[in-house]
Image (cartoon, rainbow, N blue to C red; front, side):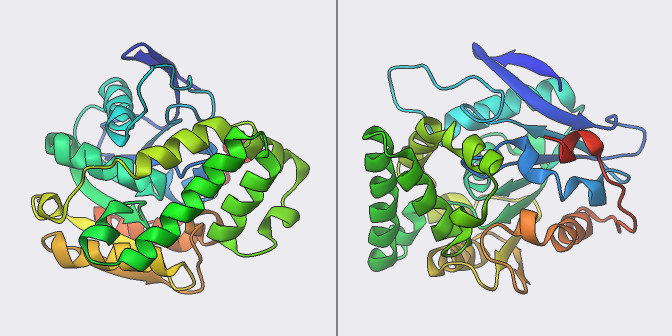
Length: 287
């Protein structure tokens, strides 16, 4: 996969197809605790219609970890994405972000709207919006979960941290159902997942900021996801001008992995293209 340096960070990204030639670019930003391979099941439904770019965010996959003395922020991740798109895309992109990647996508769209043709947010981790909306109970529950994970990670209890994270987002018992390789990949990123968790609570996005987003925006929310994510999506729907909302029937938080065809259809529809065929992509399936 291609590599580049962005603000001194060695970054890797997945790229499929070529920009231009009548094909728009879709940029895919992954959830925390994973990498660009997060999109391996969604990509086959999109690759015939779009030029696809999916960076490994800082500290995930094969992109270098955060090495600055200050804490990493979502804006740091957005700067990385901007650098990757400057190399891989030749104009504004359809920007898609899931979970942690969704929060990063919002920061990029706010700071550099000229780079974003349209925006798709799949249950973004914009936790501070809960407090702004007066949802103090939900906010505190998310904060307790985050800092329990961080405490486990700092104490070397990576397995406990991993089980807590995975089961919260995908349902009790999911951690135990993962393959040994899947657990190993997640555990190898425990430190950087903790750093990402911290950054979730320093995200400066406000409801007033949301009202400045002028690009066509779509939110997706699983019908079986957590109450916190459902509320965040409702806040986006209410405050982003002209925002559309889609419920993903039967999905929990990890819809790009459990309902990839449905997610891809909504991305394509939002971008104005009907995707009718899917071909497997061997190099991503093997990732």
